[in-house]
Image (cartoon, rainbow, N blue to C red; front, side, top):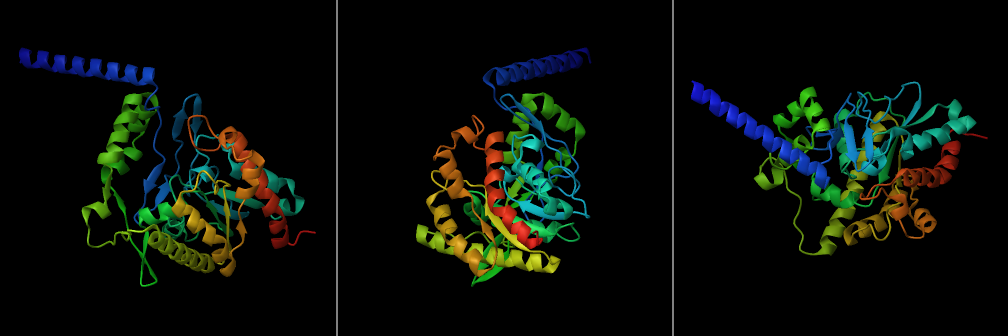
Length: 360
């Protein structure tokens, strides 16, 4: 018994020393900055924010807590008495590494409050951004969570990687011109339990070692890749040998996704509008994304979806140099970049909204 107890002590002390060395090394090398989880996949396979959480995210000297509502939006939950414009987008819309008051959605609300007519109409922009998403994520999200939400208008905010994400995420597949629901990722119960574990979140927010462990489990244990596992109940994305085939398919997929989104909007009795973060320009767009985005304005015109693309204005304002508007060591807009997005978008959006609300 004494020998077994001694061996246990040796194992414990060795593990503790290893943990201390690993933690010290990660801090010295500035790797695996502490953070906790705010993203999950729902049963349709689309990404969503977790609800009723205040996750921590850090990067260099940036330390921010995201306040997530019971409706999975960032910031305060929508008030049913307001005219709620839900803005769907990726991490640029969510405002990754930005304090709430620095996000472009927050600035839009400030601008709306300064316009007496829009203020009287209680116009409110709701931040429904989810990191890593594209066009296919938003109708899939609405199919799961859209019923009975306080929504008065939908606004799809496109970013430069939307179209490739829509393809590879495999939320939908086109077959014979028909849009069919599909799936790419299944979230395993282990991740779901850890996401809601207060003790695990505390460990991640205080020790880089646990953030690193979580990242390794994210890649290897948390999800099942339906495409790779060959699950016959779901269809994989098509395989293309030529870029022209991929572009043609994704243009048709984008049209089908917008038609599905319009169906969902009609079911809720609300309009659908679309815009861009302003990053739909060189050097951000891949050849495939650029080709699909080039076809998007005509598609939206045919579908009678108002389109507010600030990319030319942003490119001209920045002189093609996005670095001053970007977080150092990262790819996302900094506070100045987010405010610039809001200012340029408001130039186009304000007159449109005044027309909608018949402002004098």
